[in-house]
Image (cartoon, rainbow, N blue to C red; front, side):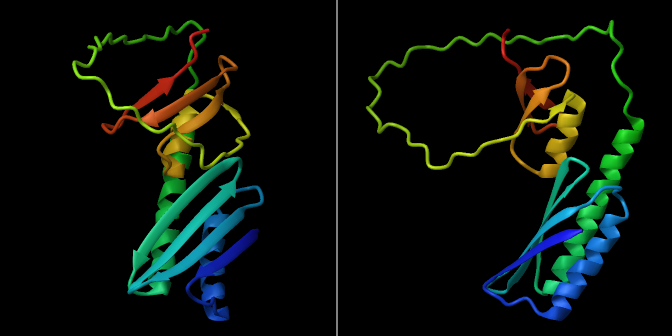
Amino acid sequence: MRVTMSGRHMEITDALKDHVESGLQKLKAHFDRIIDANVILAVEKHRHIAEITIHANGIRIHGKESTDDMYKSVDAVVEKLDKQISKYKDRIKRYQPRKAREEREYLKNIIAIEEPAAPVEETKPHRVIHREKLTLKPMTVEEASMQLELAGEPFLVFMNAETQQVNVIYPQGDGTFVLIEPPF
C-alpha cells in the first residue's frame, strides 16, 4: 500500500502516522489489488479534520470527518470509508446485468422559455480558472452511479460501456440520478 500523508497547520507525529496506517490496514483487507491512499490531516481553530482518499481496484473512495481530537477524526473517517466499501461490495454482489432485449424508457419534459421583458444587463465574459484532464474508464450506468456515490462528487463524467460515448451522471436529490447522453 502506498500512503501519502500531509498535514495542514500541524506536524504529523510518528504516533499519529502509525495510527493512520493501522486504520488503513483494516481497509486494505477489502481489496485484492494495491491501494493508493492520500491522507490530509488539518487543524482549523478547534476542529481536527481527517480526509482520506483511496484509489483501489479502479475506484476512488473519499471520506472526510471533523472532531475535537485528531485520533477521533481518523477513527471516524476510517469507519465511514469501511461502511462505504461494504455498501459498494454489497451492491456489486446484488448486481444483475441487463438483458440484451430489455428496452430503455426515456422521459421527455418540454419546458417553454419565455423571453425576458426587460433587457438583460451585459455581464463580463466567463473565465476558465481551472482545467482538469480526465481519463475516462468505460463503465455501465450502474457502475457510474456507484462510483459517484463513493466519490462524493457533484457529478461524474464517464465513458458508457454500452454506447462507447461520453456521458455525465449526477444525483437528483431524491435517491435517483440524471444521465446526460449525447444525441447521436
